[in-house]
Length: 74
Image 1 (tube, rainbow, N blue to C red):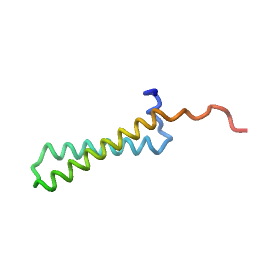
Image 2: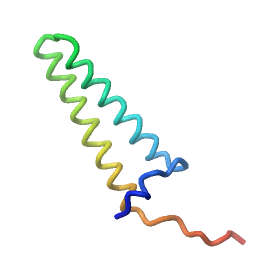
Image 3: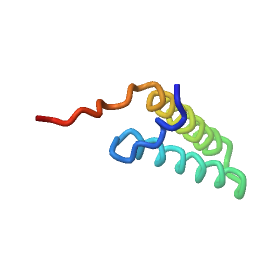
């Protein structure tokens, strides 16, 4: 597993990972800066954790995928 495989701007999963991690950060910031009723707090925390886990899973998948072949197409 290589960390350099994580940066794949042509792969849609790369952009989805970035969006999920950014959304998770925004949700986390919202939870720390304001007070919400308990049900809303639990819902936002669940979304933040879900986004973080899904983003991490996509990152591991990107790092484990084999690099595309470098052979020219004839």
